[in-house]
Image (cartoon, rainbow, N blue to C red):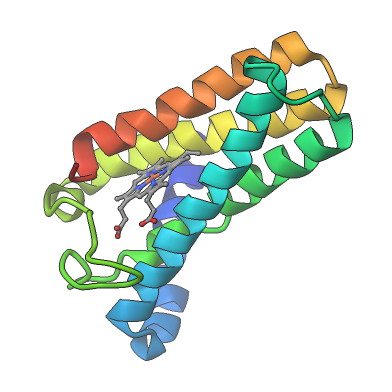
Length: 156
Ligand code: HEC
């Protein structure tokens, strides 16, 4: 199951479909879409942090469910398709920060993406329960899974 998810994330399982759609996608657009996806997740992670981790903003279950669902939806969207060959260089909203190693180490990327996917789905499930302790724990795991990929594959 994990393998399947990782494959979906990387677009490996859907390679033939991806090839068709990527034939039309410009490198610049692929980089833009992935940067936008990460930035949008980051905004939603911030909401959960503010309400459930820091308590800087009062907890609102509906907002946290919505935020967690966004993160899970982006995680499940198959972002691997946004890393077409040749997109190790180029600009989207700005110069890409992906490291060349990303494209040379797909099994490791797949593992990290699979972990991230699982954690994001668990965060959405925790958010639905409204149990702030569980949300906080699941949020921590998602954060670790974001960082694990950045540490290896995103330039500073
Ligand atoms: C499988 C690897 C991977 C995972 C998982 C991952 N990221 Fe990233 N992230 C990247 C890479 C690679 C880039 C650089 C993309 C580029 O510039 O082309 C990036 C870029 C970003 C950016 C900068 C976006 C911009 O404006 O250009 C933010 C913010 C970010 N990630 C947040 C997150 C958050 C939050 C999570 C978890 C909820 C996450 N990322 C999970 C690999 C990952």
